[in-house]
Length: 194
Image (cartoon, rainbow, N blue to C red; front, top):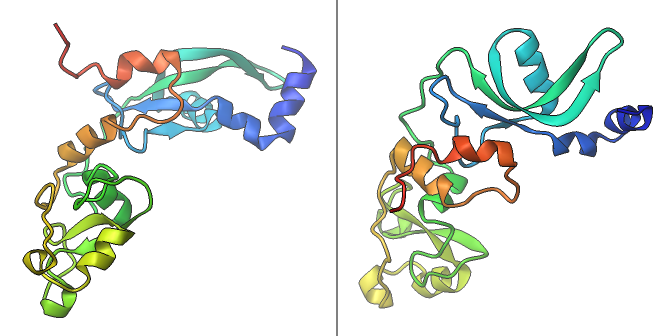
């Protein structure tokens, strides 16, 4: 590897994003699918050096210090199992992920907001069971009316998702970039097609 590559790494932080490491739990499943559990290459090298992870795949790129050199890890496995969270945080992002990034009234994708099925002005609360993703036109059309009064129906009734539901939803929205070395680890527990 030439000196120009090393100076590119040091002087262009954006270049470092080209070598993320997929982080797997001790059971070889990703910590999360959406967002995909990734570390910058520096964190992966540091964790390997501190013996916190096992490297299972590497890029064809190297980093060097004055005394040693490392191939950049592309997949690492935690040596200690991290218990997955059972409770899903009620956030705007998780709400949109639960609703698959589409309006629960018309199915439109794109610019979304959220809507209280039973309006707050009528006693509705902000909860998984009463809030859905909605496009602006549908949200404005429904306003503070009931579904019946607005003449609208829901595509899916809102409910609190489980952590497994969210993992499965995340698998349907892969990131823009998946390194070849990650593929064997991302969908290994999915049912095979005949």
